Amino acid sequence: MPIKLLPTANSWPLFDAASSRVIEAAALAHVGPNVSLMERAGLAAARLTLALVPAGTGPIWIACGPGNNGGDGLVAARLLHQQGLKVQVSLIAASQSPPADAATALAKAQQAGVPISDVVQAPAGVRLGLDALLGLGLNRSRPPSPEMAAAFTALNSLGAPVLAMDLPSGLLPDTGALAGELAVRADHTLTLLTLKPGLFTAQGRAHSGQIWFDELDQTPVGTPDALLIGAECLARWRLQNTADPTKHKGTQGDVLVIGGAAGMRGAARLAARAALAAGGGRVYACLLGAPADEADPQRPELMRFDQARIQASSAIGDWRHKVLVCGCGGGSEIAKFLPPLLQHAQRLVLDADGLNAVAADKDLQVLLKQRQSLGLATILTPHPLEAARLLGSDATTVQSDRLKAAQLLADEFLCAVILKGSGSIIAGPQRRPAINSSGNAALATAGSGDVLAGWLGGLWAQQSKADPFSLASLGCYWHGEAAESQTAGPLRAADLVERMYALHRAP
Image 1: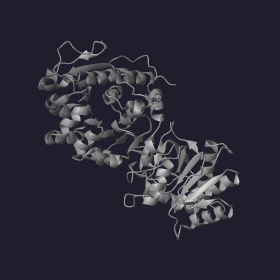
Image 2 (image 1 turned 180 degrees about the vertical axis):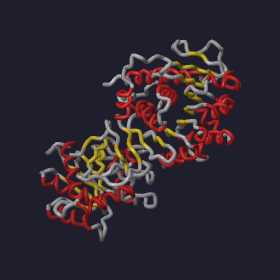
Image 3 (image 1 turned 45 degrees about the vertical axis):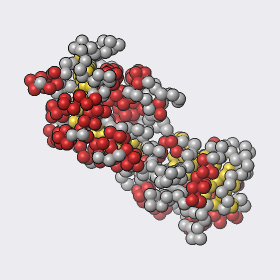
Image 4 (image 1 turned 135 degrees about the vertical axis):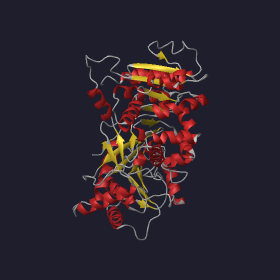
C-alpha cells in the first residue's frame, strides 16, 4: 500500500527525471516476467483509489495519455473495474505506436470490458478523477498540446478529488515549475518508484496536494540529486542538547543582531528574540541609529550593543567571535557596516538588507567570496527577489529553477544558502542540495524571515563548529514545523518565535 509521505520523520532521497529514468530502466531489467512494473504501478493506484473512494459510491474517471503514464492508468482502470467499481477512461492523444507495455495495458483493459473513449468528458456523478496523462513524459521543449490542456482543464473543473499518478500533469519534475500556463491541480499525488524534486518546491506543493509514495518493491540505485529534509534533524538536535547541569549562559554562545534602522526596529527585535528563544546564551541588539538605552522593552533579556563598536578597528575583538545576524531591517544604513563584518566575523548570517547591499556593491561581493578562504563561515537567507539581485537575474528566472538558483548562489559566494519560499532550498558549495519538507502559507507574513535568521544565529551560537549547511537545514525545518498546526490565516512573527520555542520539547 502506498505510504502517506508528509509530514515525514525521515529524510528522503530525491531523483530528477533523468535519474528516475535510469532507475526505471534498471527496475525493468530486474522485474520478473509475471508482474510488470506497469502492473505494480497500476495496482498501487487502484489500492489508493479504493482507500480514497469507498466502493459503490460513484464512478471513477481516468484520463490517460498515450505513454507509459497512461498505461499505468489503464492498469488501474482494469483492476478497479474488476473490483466492481464504475470506471470511465478517456484516452487522450492516442498513439499509433504506443510503448509496448502501454499497448499491452490497453489491450487488457479492452478485453476486461473497461469503457474507453477518446472524448474528454467525465461521467455524471464522478467521485474521483485520476490523472494519468503525462507523468515524467513532459519537459520544457514539449509543453502540453491543446488536447492535453483541455484534459487538464476538465480535471481541474471536476468538482471531485483528483489523484495524479507520479506527477500532476503539467508540473516539471525537476523544478516544480509549470511547463506552460496550465497544470493539473491534484488533491493527491501518488509518486512511483522515486521521489521527484519538483513535487516539493515552487508550484509543486500547491499542485500535488497530499503526496503518497510507492517504491514498487524496488530499491533506487545511484546517487540522489537532492535530499528531502524530514523531522529527524530536529530529533537529533534534541538528543544532542538534552539538559546538562554544567551549562551556563557563557557556554551557550553570544549572538549579535545588527539592523533595525529607523522605521524597521521590529525586524531586528524579532531576530534577536528568535536568537534568544533558540538558546543563545547572550543576545545583543545593535539597532542602527537608536538611542543608546533602547533595545527591546518587551524582552529585557536582550542587551544593547553600540554601533560605534562595529566600525572601530580597536573594537573588532568585541564582536568577531559572536554569531552575527546582519541585515534585518537594516535599510541603506547597513552597507557601511558590512566591510569590517565581512572581513572579520567568524560566523555570519546575512539576511534582507544585508543581502541587498552586497548585491549592489561589487567590492562587498569580493569580500563575501573571500570569507571561505579566511576560514570564516556564512549563511545567506535570501527570498527569490533578493536571490535574483545577487545573481543579476530576476525573480521569475529564480523561481523557474529554484534548485539551480540556490546552487549558483552557494557556488558563487562559497557559503551555505537558504533560498526561502514554498519548499525552501538549502545549498552549499559542491554539496547535494536539500529541500525543506515543513512549513505552509502561514509563514507568508512580515517578519517570518527575520525570525529564521535570528533562530539560525541562536542555534549556531551553541555549536560553534557546526556545519553551516546542516545548521541551515535544521533551522529551516524547525521554522517550518512551527507553522504546521496553523491551517488558515497568517502566523504572526512574534507568535512564530513562541511556537518555535515550544518545539524545544519533544512531542
